[in-house]
Length: 77
Image 1 (tube, rainbow, N blue to C red):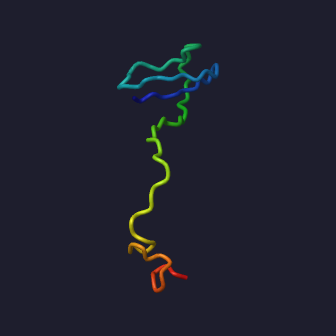
Image 2: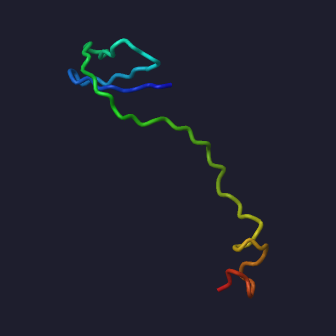
Image 3: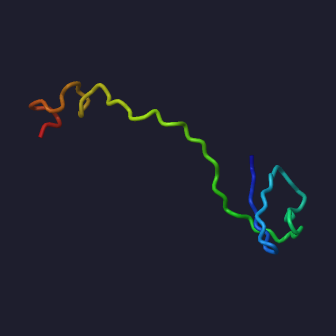
């Protein structure tokens, strides 16, 4: 839902308005002034909970199973 915040330049009150094709003028809810400035607001985001650390894939570091650390493997040092 498009909820916007406006600060009244007369009294400093921050007002929230639900804007859905609204045509009537916005007025401060505290003093009734039309002198409102739209504020940049942070949006609310819902993030799915983490499932914890992920398990390594079945392949080794180069994608070949059991290759890491073996002589001649792609990642032996």
